[in-house]
Amino acid sequence: MSNATLQDRAAGAIMGAFIGDALALGPHWYYDLDELRRDYGPWISGYTDPKPGRYHAGLKAGQLSQAGFILALTLRSLVACGGYDEDDFCRRMDEDLLTLLDGTPMNGPGGYTSQSIREAWRRRVEQQQPWGQTGGHADTTEAIERTLALAVRYALEPQNLALTITQNTLLTQVDETVVAMTVAYGAVLGVLVQGHALDASLSNTLMKQVKAGVLPFHAVTSDRLQPPRPGDPDPPRAGLFASPDALLTPSYMAIAAADPDLRIEPAWKVSLVYGMPCAIYHQLPAAYYLAARFRDDFESAVLHAVNGGGQNQARAILTAALVGAQVGLTRIPARFLDGLDEADELSRLAADLAETVRAGGVN
Image 1 (cartoon, one colour):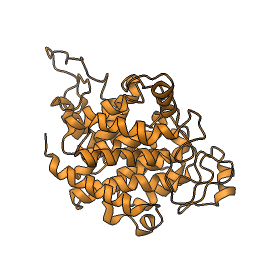
Image 2: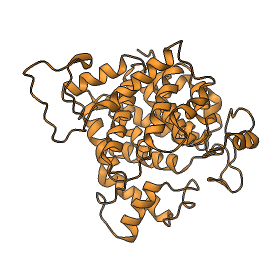
Image 3: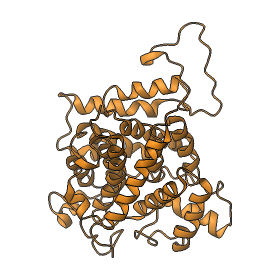
Image 4: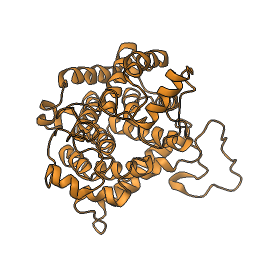
């Protein structure tokens, strides 16, 4: 278990996500690694300006992308309301984000608008659909990048964590597998904020919550994935995700990271092993691997996430939140905070959210 305090871990997860987002702003979406190295050298070690003609051109080193912008919006809603209030969140999305968009990719805060946010804009602004009918079928980690704040807020309340993340995710992403994997990431982050390490036993901890009816995943196996006993009833499926497999992935990645006979060297090549594209099923294994391998080393984890190219911004956000939760804010190198744009305001938001975690209680 982590020696950091609950509030330090909570703030570390949030600030880690912001740092990961900003570190990848410049070298975002280079699928040609030779081109990435030509533009940024053999090793990216800090914040960088986006190059002209790239996805975030015109922004400066240390600034946030639209993912960071929406995460900050989510934090402001959570802090103002003391928890998740969907009406308040949707109002802020209407007033503070959608009014700045025009439905095209290269537009809006952060210089680029993701597929699922563009689809939500079309349904909400062009078609005048109510929130709740705005979700699309993008298979990315877009919802994770904001709902990680919900995972932190409800880290001590896993049932509320799963419910609020599900509800919030459905506003922009409706594919059931994507929603399940998004909730699973939130559940992982929640137990890390509690003080657990991302190790081989983490998935067993989550499966106990499934068996207790706390996490909404369907599972027929007995403890440690053993066969059900003769006569055991089929668990009810209504309202449950199809299987708990998304909760099992993290520990398999942790086992792989600890296996001396199975090494990815250098670690940034995790992007080549699990895939460089945007889809959630490429991103999560890589983030879990890096967060397990470097669970005590924030700098190595986030920089290997960034240097792997491709959709390195999502990989860095997800990895940095997981490692930030394990090391705590006080063990994130100061230079990453010093170079982060609007770090004082973001740190206040993170601290305010961390205080609500203590107030939340345990289910």
